[in-house]
Length: 239
Ligand code: 4AZ
Image 1 (cartoon, rainbow, N blue to C red):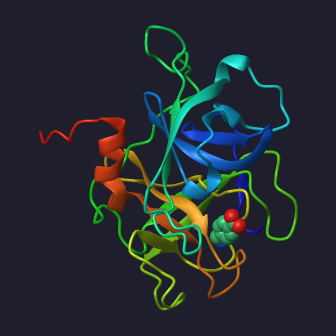
Image 2 (cartoon, rainbow, N blue to C red; image 1 turned 30 degrees about the vertical axis):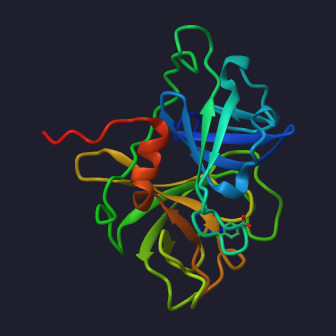
């Protein structure tokens, strides 16, 4: 798929792979602490069947067991609609390692991504990054994590009349796109101070990398309060 590049090991440090019943099927973004953000359609309310893989790069490579974390709880947005993909957002709470309450060992290859607090932080025409192990258009999923730059277009009601809903966000249609298997993974934008935010979650699209068929993402900033409520994280402190 034109525009995709293979990542180097540890390039996308918040990227996780989600495994359900032993099968990799989705990506996710590490928010820090015991929390991973993904798409609702990537999970089911069956925490025991899931494993979260950190610092994975080639998904056929043997992974250090300390980077494979069991799941304690799965929180699916209660207004998620699997027919329309409205509110396609979920939080995965990792199992604690021990009484310390930590969920993973310190790992220099893992870094959390920030949650955007305002739907205005990034704008159409901004360049952001997507990453995943998903399909290259028609072909099979890729074994090495890939990444690409995409351009935000914001609202895409004009492409997807009546099926584009609030809480969704699009990227420019064309050659570079997310595809099947990338779902749940992050669309990340970086601000002028160098902080990276998970602006979108790969959600859906009508095929992949086709003109006039933009990729659609869950607009994470729209769910800031929802994320805060479930993670128990306090409000942003204004300095
Ligand atoms: C999918 O099937 C899928 N081009 C995900 C993203 C896109 C298309 C399909 C966006 O999971």
